[in-house]
Length: 433
Ligand SMILES: Cc1cc2nc3c(=O)[nH]c(=O)nc-3n(C[C@H](O)[C@H](O)[C@H](O)COP(=O)(O)OP(=O)(O)OC[C@H]3O[C@@H](n4cnc5c(N)ncnc54)[C@H](O)[C@@H]3O)c2cc1C
Image (cartoon, rainbow, N blue to C red; front, side, top):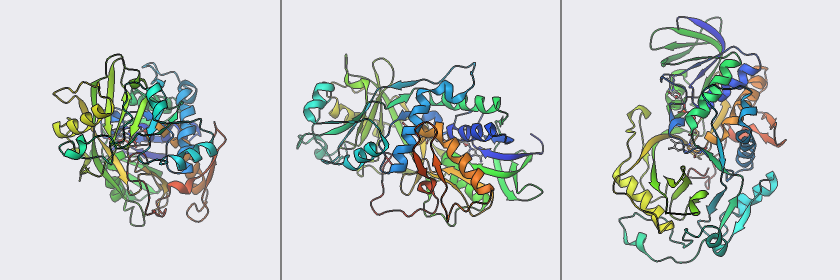
């Protein structure tokens, strides 16, 4: 790359780094995106289940995901660029979130009403009518599949809330590629095989970013969009001491199995906190099964995301697929695991950090906690709005920036994703966020 300068350097060419680069380049900034891997979207984005849903525990979370859902439905319009490699497609399937305890989703459906997200309350009879292959029995709280408790009879029936507009993006890497191509078409530069090893305040520009090769790029603004490597990049820049929420990499497995034959149940996405799993369609006759951090399973924290073994393991496969077989009694359980492992960048409250920092010109879009792929169409706008305001002298810590979301007209207070937010005792502790 040799030595160069730009208005803005974005570290990370995942689905968020490319989204941010696109929105910044659209407004005339000279943007350079750096990624250590050999292709766009090859970090945690590549492992994503790509689920686009609206169940979040806060108004800001519901509003952002609802806005982003509109972006996925109009993906070509959002990009404003024809990618010759094809477009990532959004499959609208609807999603049922089962209630862990009766009434668990009431606070969330109240937020749906406030935001304007269509939803339906399903009791056990409705669940059986709509999803005849799904057993609505209450088995929770989740138990190890090696325990007697796991095999106990149902102690009741579940209810749930259904959002018809939820769905999934089958190829998350292609979505990041689309955003990267649109950013380049708007004037951004994306440079691959470029590992950032140092971020220092220096020179005529405020920041000097140094690569493993020894080349440098000077910039006024640096954005950390390094996914599960976010804490490493913050450490390079000396940022993080004042954060109230930490980010930490966590290994996660997703498995692919054959769906029950002729099943309608697998045509929609189901989140199942009662058993600690989620499932989504994965093409004809196939089902993806992932985990929801049940308390009975030890979390797999990582010191370094590069240490992750991408292969699925038998114990996690058995735990997740046997739980899925409890919910779908006709589900065939294969002998060998088929699937993948990826890494979440988990915050204390499972909500992301989209913020400036105490080092002028250094911004973060991190801590995506396994639930921010869906927000890619809007995170670029969030970060562009924040960067424009703060670079113009606005003190976002004292007087939070507010954003009117362009497609829905909803207003969100960007301090919802502040690095300095208080963490409530009852803050979310799972990927639902
Ligand atoms: C198994 C799994 C399932 C998921 N399912 C869903 C889902 O269904 N719905 C949903 O909304 N979200 C989901 N997520 C979360 C979602 O995928 C992430 O929130 C999102 O992809 C994060 O994108 P990102 O761009 O921030 O990070 P990444 O895609 O990880 O990109 C970060 C990039 O930074 C680069 N980088 C890191 N350090 C450096 C450095 N020093 N120098 C240069 N480059 C560097 C990396 O190479 C990487 O390409 C899931 C995640 C996983 C792992």
